[in-house]
Length: 79
Image 1: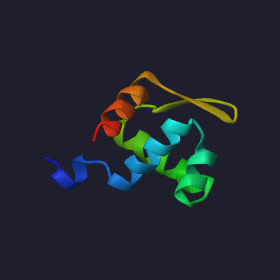
Image 2: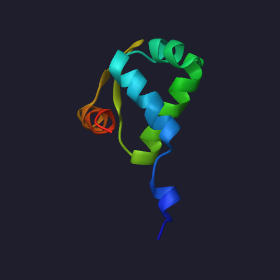
Image 3: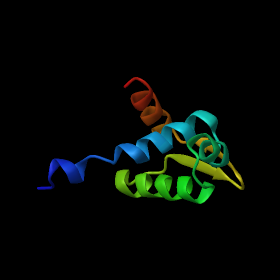
Image 4: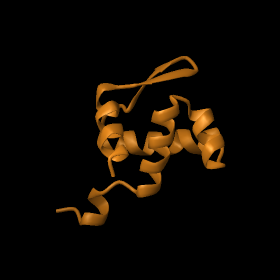
């Protein structure tokens, strides 16, 4: 059985997800968080691997939330 620490996603990654989901832009989230776009992308990829589902649908350089991404945004926005 995994420890609680390994079952919970890192709070920093959820903070990055919230900014990217709210702005629907990895670039705008990066500017808001004072990090690079690549750092945002890496955190999103980490969360998608952690949860084992896509949080965003990619359309070239544009992104939109997947249905599960919308549910996660609702949950992290109400914390």
